[in-house]
Amino acid sequence: MKRIGLLCVVFALVCCSWLAGCSAVSKAEPGQAPYQQYNGTAQDTATAGEGSTGETADANLSALADAPFMPADAQADQERKIVWTVDMEVETLEFDNFLAQLDQAVQEFGGYLESSSVSGNSIQYASSRNGALTVRIPSQQLDAFLSQVGQIGTVTYTNKSSEDITLDYIDVESRIAALEVEQERLLSLLEQADDLNSVIQLESRLSEVRYQLESYRSTQNRYDSMVDYSTVTINVREVQRVTTVHDQSVGQRIAAGWSDTLYQLKQGVTDLFVWFVVNLPYFLIWAVLAGIVVLVVLRFVKKRKRQEKDQSEKQSPIGPVPPPQ
Image (cartoon, rainbow, N blue to C red; front, side, top):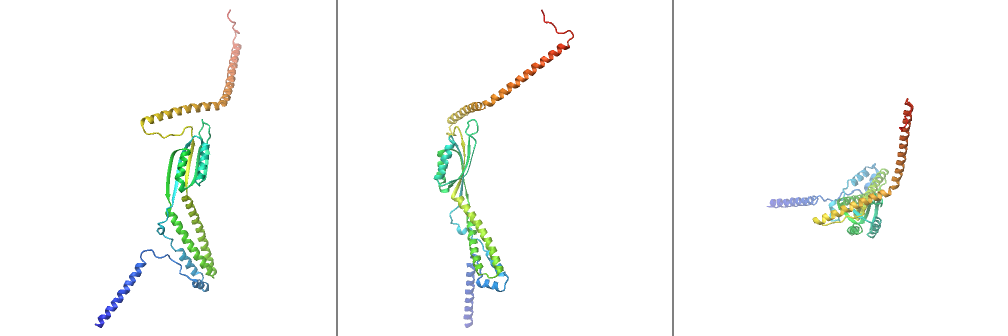
């Protein structure tokens, strides 16, 4: 009986040990193990200065370089980063007035002008003026600004698109956080290092980390600007008659078509007349030159006929023929 009791006790101890091991393994299984940390201490750095030749520093740098980035799903609840882009085509009867009101609207909504170009002229027979403007508007004020543009001009086309850069933004944030941690560890190791080779290697790696940090921070600032300020491209065209939106009934479509045709015919005749009057000095110059050329040619022909007549009279044996009585 004593042997049986002893065996039971031993069996119970084995089971407890096995269950404790399984519990420890299960805690380490889910794949969310803590990030790899640097295990070196000041004593390790001192040891590197005493007898090693930078091997410990190499191991420290390798441990820091192998540290994984913060996983993207760790910040899944972060606010989404959306970049809005809008393309618009606008017609206006008063080109200069539209540009002035647009500039005022941009300032009222807290935006700024990124680029602007104007081409053409205001002469009716020639091509009208065209402008291409790119403005940056706070994303929260985007819809209100687009509505304001529709009030100062006639919008004929609008294309509004978005791009989700949340994952890219989180990735940049994670890399910045990891590099900042590595920078702090490198600075701590650099303060404790007393071996010249270790100091050189640590400073070299520290320079690389600082360069990468500046690059990622620049990217983050660019992302912030893209998200906070939407890009609106406006192509404005000066016209003599703005496009109107008609109902889809057959009668109204026919009436609108006749109206547009008559307007275009009238505008074409007007433009032709204006073009003729404006270019009249050139026509006068060409007319004078053409008249001079015609006179020269007529004189040359007349002179040539006279010479031929005189030559034929000289070659005749009976002399000139008297006129009939």
